[in-house]
Length: 318
Image (cartoon, rainbow, N blue to C red):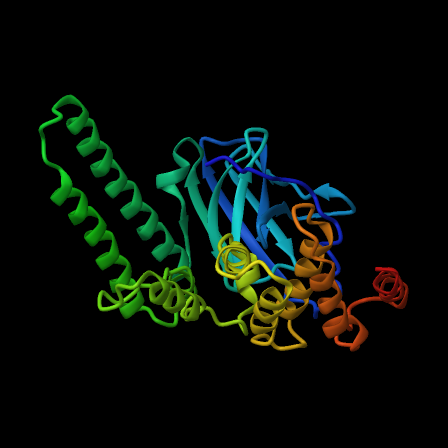
């Protein structure tokens, strides 16, 4: 895979500056078909990707002539991370849970060869291989259909979908406490009961149950690729575009967090920026609502006095 958005971000918003220092962790690498080269560690934060670094520079992991290297930091936090190979910036995702990791892989076969010594990463690889296998089946069927239009492949396509659903449900049932499985579950879409046939009732059911599998107490969610886009979808697609309805949805989401958590800070900071910077609609009153609820109220404890005063001054000018 190729990384889509990659840059150093020395200060990582203000969100990581107020949190406790994590334990020191080491990643060890044994990479076949790679010598005297380097790689990097990336991560997700919201809907963006970054690379770990210091003072505005990406931290490079040097791989020696025998394909070995190591990487140690004390500020890595649980979530989905990226092993990135410049200059092409192709990458492989892995899961970090707070423990040291050993990586074994073949640089020429990144998708299939990566092995990491943790159950979450074993299950992640198993899931990825299942996706690749079923994708190949799907492509074979559609290519056969293209050559023979009268060929009926509908039942075969249904079986592929059912096989994948069954596979993931098996992981969820067998490993309910595993972090990767928790991510699978959190990313599940809402299944509307067949008994609900009215369009409006389907919408209401879907919206009501949209966050059923999201635990807003889990800070690691902000370091996945799916969580913040899911929040934005709820606000942009499932919430009526009026100040009153948007404010209700914002409060519903943020009220599910702990006020002392990274999740709370991340959502307040990013949603404030979202409604401050939009040009498609006047969301001034939504922005002011967030300022009132979380900044003027004193809940935004991460904000410096200078930052807070600037926000409050802007509030009174609007």
